[in-house]
Amino acid sequence: MGNRGILHDSQKRLGKARWKHKAWIICVLKHKDWHREVMTPNNYTELFFLDDAVALSAGHRPCALCRREDFDAYRTAAGFNGTAKEMDDALHAARAVPRVFGQRRHSEQISSLPDGTVIDHQGTASLVFGDTLRPITAGGYLTAIPRPRNGLCEVLTPEPSVEALRNGFVPVMHPSL
Image (cartoon, rainbow, N blue to C red; front, side):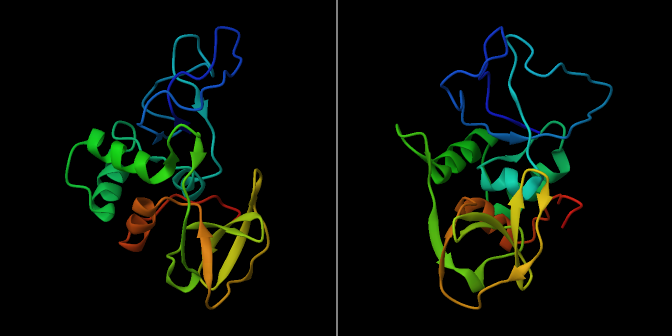
């Protein structure tokens, strides 16, 4: 589950805003004995992702509260030494195109990408996994296709998260993988 702030109104309708702050986080669905009603008025809007790899590709990072161990591992692997706010500012700069509300993308050699990176492959968001690509759907990963051995590709996962994956951060993955 993710969070970008309060994006809905009292009737649970999404507004035009797609984020309200720079702390885009990935939370667990169950934490302690807490219970939330989805889209509670005046509280953050829950966003649901297939798994960590998809949430990372959207520009999110593990929550420092409910996923402290993952947060620390991500921060270390991504090379962040400062505060969570400084990390969120850097992630925001890497994921968002200012005033356009678009996703910043970058190009990289497909052969150099670590497992867990999401790329645009022939118009489809696909997960890099070993020697394969796994097209992503809302219900899970589709059948593996061979990963090209070379060439530039459009990377959807922001650069700090690619670096975290490259340096050993292990995302929680959907069982269909």
